[in-house]
Image (tube, rainbow, N blue to C red; front, side):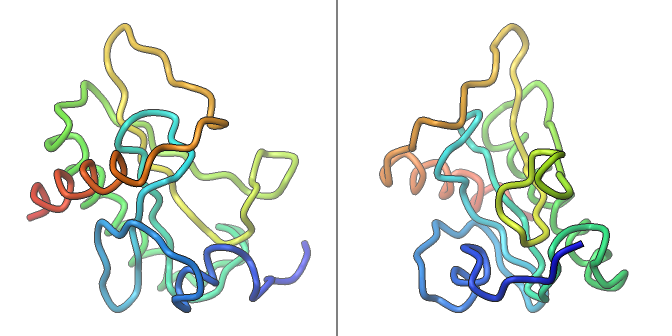
Length: 139
């Protein structure tokens, strides 16, 4: 497995070098809106500690990131009245991983509605409005 790249996009977001529409943050994790959502409300959850993916992550960091993933998934479901939540986590390029910093996708799904391709960038207004709804549903 390749080494962790400190210049990946999520590491740059964590350092404040790139913007993100934040949903939740604590000492160990960050959750923010995916700018190429598969569904309105598609949120990413990452650890603040460096890890290329689940295979090389510190077990303690995994505990923190899965707790935050659960918390955010509950808020997304509640805020957006989703019928279900898809949690997705990919490891290495052949599995579909594109950003090599451990992350979990929280994707709301609705009965009878398919997911859209992730090639459409969401507007900043849509992302902020959806993030506010999710933030309001966090408990």
